Length: 422
Image (cartoon, rainbow, N blue to C red; front, side, top):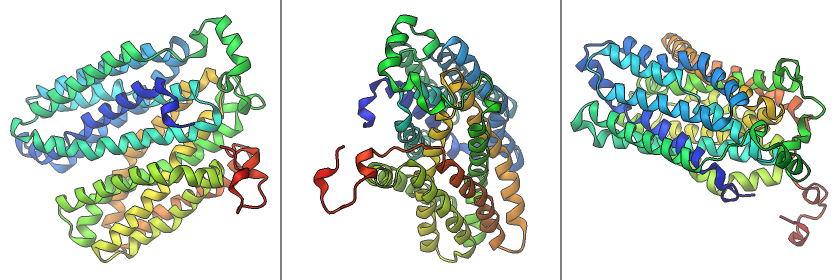
């Protein structure tokens, strides 16, 4: 199936896109904020992490509430909180108001876990890895556009991006209210759900019949997958939050060059996702595709310690993008498949909590590593953190999360394409 086969997901892509666009649009204003409000880099770092701190506690809570009261109402509440945060940002006159704006947005930061839960509700298990990867693609697209748009709005000060982000968030909320259909099985008419359980592969969810539980903590698949994802997120958090400092210290890169490198990294992911991801996934299947990416992280991160030229760094960044594109979305899809429909919001809230925790610990650990005299330690530690997810991928391989058809798996003569039925 292709993305276009799921028009019900369109409001989710728009919601995630606008949420990330609203955040990335203010990134060019960080030097302005430091000068305008006489703040130190440490205060700006705390400002950025304050959103993640509150997201750790409230993301899982909103996801869990969506398991009880429905995805749509909780998603609308989250979007309303995002609007409030952007409005406060637009009219901020001191650093304290900026902190309030970021905290409010963090408290209502349920769009990611709830969006992932909706995917878990309506997408067949074998297709979830692809759709979870689409969230990452949407995230990347927003980061490609947001900083540039923020630079265009710079003559208006912080008011400009705050108002534009608020307007986009209001549009998203209206679009969600009109077009998003409730997907929580418990809120769907019982007779309709009974009929769908015969036809719909998601509601029966054969992946979890043998390992489901009212408590996800008694599900051994969940524990393995959450442990795996926590190390993936931590390594990525250290890299993402420390890369600009790494570039400045290692290669004396300025902010423009760092920004162009990150934009190129995002563009690479978009192109890879559009043209290469699905063929690799169909050839190898989801478990082995994820293993390819997780194993490649070991070398990709390690190479960071050896770069001495800009072109070398660019190649390593593209390699890291390849690793993330082939592993992260699939891993989240496996996590979704490890629980039944009653716990989709809860489990996606936990993955978002791990992301937020990584965003808090990332700059602390990365900053410490970059103060050490041995340059290779930065890439070496990231590579070391990637060992555990790769080892755990061999356990995940036994879970049976295969996406290829029986015809593909039994094919003996690859030179005859006529026997491939897709």
